[in-house]
Length: 201
Image (cartoon, rainbow, N blue to C red; front, side):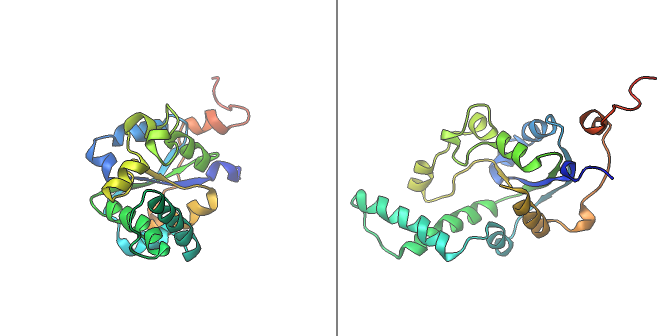
């Protein structure tokens, strides 16, 4: 039986801005070139109800994030018009509005360390401060400050799972088991075969 480590999976969603800016091929190529393989892929429009489950935030998270926003508003002399928790929920409301605004491509990448590899390629959540060479840094310059001024979500091209447990939970939300295809790539032997059997004739 194959080592289970090479079957780790990450959910990857190319967001509406990735499609609208024709970056799909470039992003997929970057992931593929690592040796990860795609075992599921579909063009779809996400629904709001499932997105709330996908982001899986609780009132503690909303209160904390909203509290940060309220403090920033107070420091700037702005009027606080609602409880902190509602400002926290606005973060997800803006994000869900963005994620449902147009088609996305949902994918499952599989391979050794899949979640870590994809997260490293994608980069930090805020494009403006993401590491150079990552997808978000190389292809967009959006920032929290600009998104906040515009009252919208940061447009950062890609969603990816943070860890393998989160990936499995997210994958179950967006894919049925029958949509996930188990298959071998020729390159799997180069990446994972202990003895490189069959290379020499």
